[in-house]
Image (cartoon, rainbow, N blue to C red; front, side, top):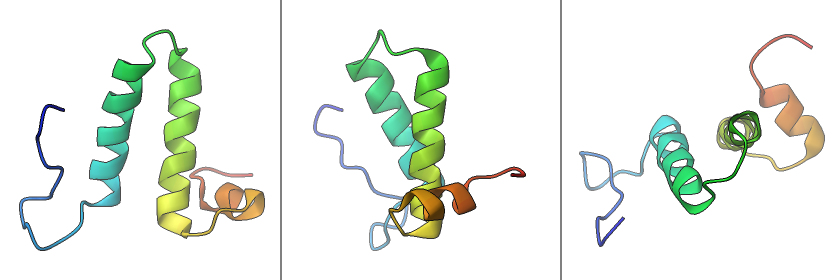
Length: 69
């Protein structure tokens, strides 16, 4: 990431949840090159659910995941 600041185009705002997930996906893929693709996808889905639901409990994460039960 070499000194790059992670900010949205509007420097007064925080990154969108999608930008955050994309950034973390790239960072984890680079830092953990041996991680299985499906495991990385599951981790990113959990991160997205946390950002959407803003509550870190198993039930809240499950409710914030896309798809049907």
